[in-house]
Image (tube, rainbow, N blue to C red; front, side):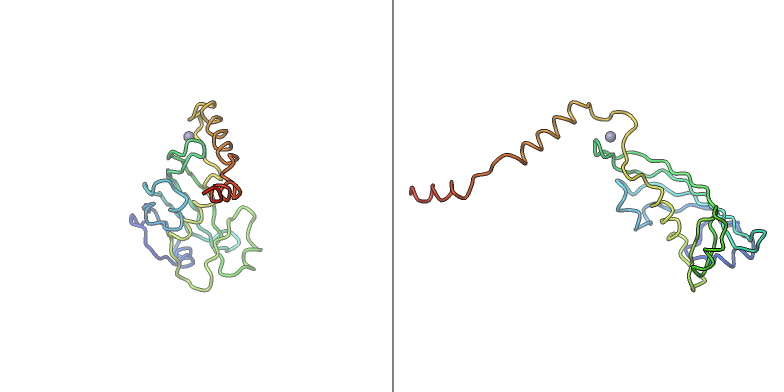
Length: 174
Ligand SMILES: [Zn+2]
């Protein structure tokens, strides 16, 4: 069992060997995930159990756990969001292999290259698990303050600016 996660892995080889990968990835190193986050802090716990199922299909049972800092859409402050994923990734080199997979499998298309970046797959899992709109469970802003803020914004937008005619008039009067 590996305690330190390798950067690159060969999923099919690991399946043949019945390997288990277990370790942590730093959130800060997940560059595609970073733009979705309020703060790039924390770690992702990863465990992958590789093997072949009864119908000889390669898979990896995945466990991913982390706490990401996302932005609350209401108060715009950073808030923690817990992610726990347990799934079975069906390892496929070609699209047509995906069709043959049990429906409970999540396809993991590795393509022609036998070596893939482990972080790429973990990143995909986390991006899919992020909330579309994150909000604190509690009312993080008093409802009244929130409404006033919106109204003021609308009024500001609607307020007439000086029209071109006003400017012309002021020029003519000089
Ligand atoms: Zn909030």
